[in-house]
Each structure stands twice: as structure tokens, then as C-alpha cells.
Length: 177
Image (cartoon, rainbow, N blue to C red; front, side, top):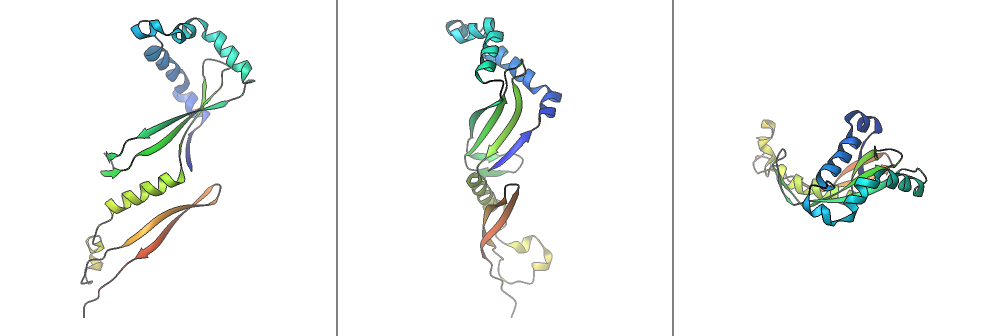
């Protein structure tokens, strides 16, 4: 699959770890939220965060560990590309370390290869014109619509090198008589 990563320097500079911790405490764990009065985790976190952090750090031996959140993005038309896309399953990977209050040390977003193939082929079908003569006036000499069809596949040549392959190319050109 493909992984997009935000480095520790970016996370530190943008204060993502601090902001996310503050957001979780403010939105999910605040005692003024009525439902939180019934949940013991809220109170445990409020009063024992430092102790819980020390426990987690000891249990994990100070190591950084991944916390993976599956995020399904619903099928639909997305602005910016003005194209219908199928459901996209994205993995948000938060790398956590409990040595201090900046729990998040790295952030990654991952997509599996098959998902990318599917997205590319769906977008291609909507974005390519039915007649390629509309794209370039030099193609006006052909008498029939130029309908180019092909399948897109992604193949990993090496761990760090992705190859884009066009397979099953179909093209018929009609010349004037």
C-alpha cells in the first residue's frame, strides 16, 4: 500500500500532539458533559492521567506503539475533483509514546494497493472523454470518435518504487478515405 507520513518535526512544529490531547479532554472527557458523569474512564483520566501515563510507559517499556483507526469515507461525489468515488477505506495510524503529555510522535495515513487501483479506474472512467478528438485539434482528421480504453494497475517494483501500468489498451482509429 501507500503510506503518507508526517514527520516528528512537523508534528512538533504544528503542536499536533498537544492539540489532539486538548481536543480529547475538551470534547470527550470533560466533566461538564452530562453523559461523562456516568463513565468511570472520564474520572480516571481526569484524576489519574499522570499515573496512567506512567503505567502505560512502563507496560510498553517506553516504546512507541501504533494505534490504528479505520476510517471509511463514504461513496459519493467529491468537490475539487468533481468525480464520484467508491467507498474509500483509509487507515489513520497514530504512533503513541507515553513518556510525557505529547502522546503522538508520528502520524501516517495508509491505503492498500487494491483500493488505489479501484479509485484510479473509477476516476479514469469519469474523467477521460468518450472522444479524444475533443482534447487536441490535431486529432480532427479522424472520422470516427477516438475511444481509448485501458485498465490501470499499480505494481511495486521495489519497496520504494511504484510502477503505473496501463493494461488491455483498446484504441481504434478511423482515417478518412
